[in-house]
Length: 143
Image (cartoon, rainbow, N blue to C red):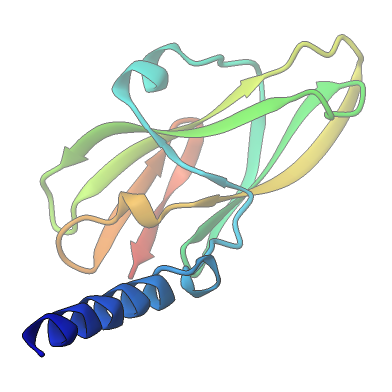
């Protein structure tokens, strides 16, 4: 009788685990990409010319509207990179940059908007200031 109770318990635990971890129950981000947290990439990733037009936050997505020259922008490789450093201020601060690799050799000028999941930028507390290279306005991220 004890063995059947143990087997039943194991089956119940396994079933609960499967239900809990089913892909349908995992919240997926609605953002286009995730932020890269790497001091090495922050310092060494491509840094082709771009202009940041606007930055805003919707939930845990950071929306960046930017422009650069090119043929149509379809081959651009864009990354949002965090420096990995957290300034100990109140609230804490992080520094990010938008990396663009642009091999297009056309004189047209295009704007794009891309979103990044910034959930991984959260620090202790409920807010952090995000500072951006080549954009003068810091952004307060509250969560």
